[in-house]
Amino acid sequence: MTAPIDPWLLERLVCPATRTPLRQEGDLLISDEANLAYPIRDGVPVLLVEEAVEVTVKKT
Image (cartoon, rainbow, N blue to C red; front, side):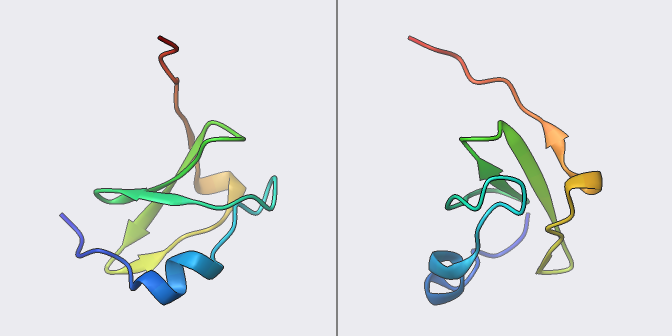
């Protein structure tokens, strides 16, 4: 598992598809607006839409 991204940096990172904030879950940065998860490889966020995987959000 990747160490948490520095909070200062995480506040400034946005989804490249929607320009909305991201949140970290383990080795992924999640875009709730786009339902995409961007990988973090060797501590480096890979914010390429081509590298993102679609995530499903359970609505309660």
